[in-house]
Length: 119
Image 1 (cartoon, helix red, strand yellow):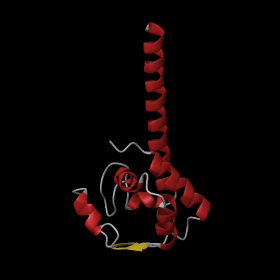
Image 2: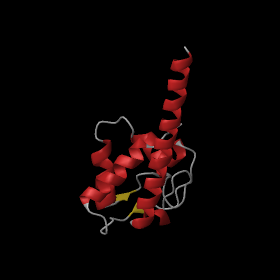
Image 3: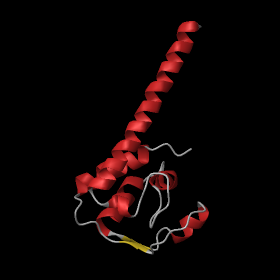
Image 4: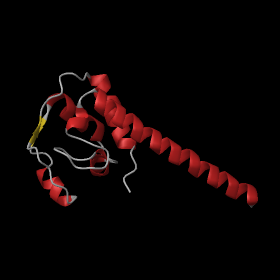
């Protein structure tokens, strides 16, 4: 029993570290690609926080494709109603296409966002 409890505790530490690493990686890429001007991990800015994006899309069949398309092509009025759902104020009505980000980079950003803890 003692070995089991030690293993569970160790797994918790590893998972907590992995989630912290994901958060740091999202923040790093957001800064690198200029996303942090409008987005943050936990705080609504001009756009929704990444954790809320993850909560909205995690588990949906086309989540990755939808989010990559939004990054590369922009979006209009996508979060106005969703902002109300999550009780956050969205200051921007649109997200412009991010021409400085290629498809592979957008996919990496989306993969990391969707890995964020949403609790």
